[in-house]
Length: 146
Image (cartoon, rainbow, N blue to C red; front, side, top):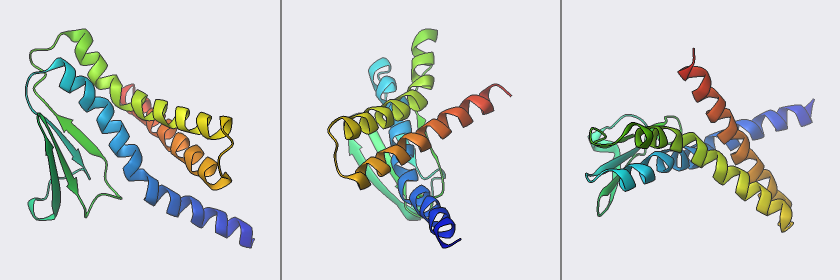
């Protein structure tokens, strides 16, 4: 009984702690192709809703990161860019880049942790990140095709 409760608490705490990592990876998966295929500024919002008083902002040349620290652990994120001038295949790459990138990074990090036999806690963390990325990927597919 106690092991079950500790396991459930671990999953909840792990989800809260690692959710922002998955969101950042997912949004980078959209932003990188958008930076490659467009000429304008790409804005990456982490924490879902832009709330002017509760944001951290980082800017690098054509990219701008906005972190809403009140919603960082709860919300998702989104990328805005001018995709009017891209071709259809480029737009598809921008859209699919998010879920594929987060899943690929989760898969590679877990594989490398197993291959190089790093500390057991890191294996669990990378497995958890991979599972969250896979869950997000399946949730996005379900939402798109319902």
